Amino acid sequence: MEKVKVGYFDSPGVTGNYSITGLGFKPRIIHFYGSKNDGLQTWYHSSQSFVDINGNQVCNSFTGNYSNTYRGDNQIRTDRCIYLFAGGGAVQVNASFVSMDDDGFTLKFNNTNSIFRIRYQAIG
Image (cartoon, rainbow, N blue to C red):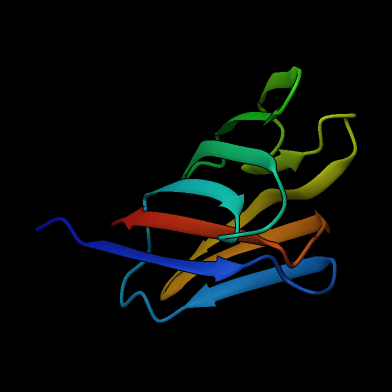
């Protein structure tokens, strides 16, 4: 029987390893969605990514601003599972896969910004 758990967390306040627990199973694959928290600034940032139990990860991110001019960018990364960046290219949130754990998963954050929320769907 396949197990599924959905949840979210805000980008951690510090870099380094960050573990999510309480899933009740060891995930085989996780789908991440990253975005800004509601009501914050006019820029939008979005990221969709996957990581599997073997450590294969891919992330598609885009950002932009709708005002008098549209500016945006799109990036696909295979070296991380969470990646959000600003319109000028500055990295906002950046995490790579560490492990699937018996009750959750662990990621390594190299950049953090608390105005971003990460949603996930873990499948075991």
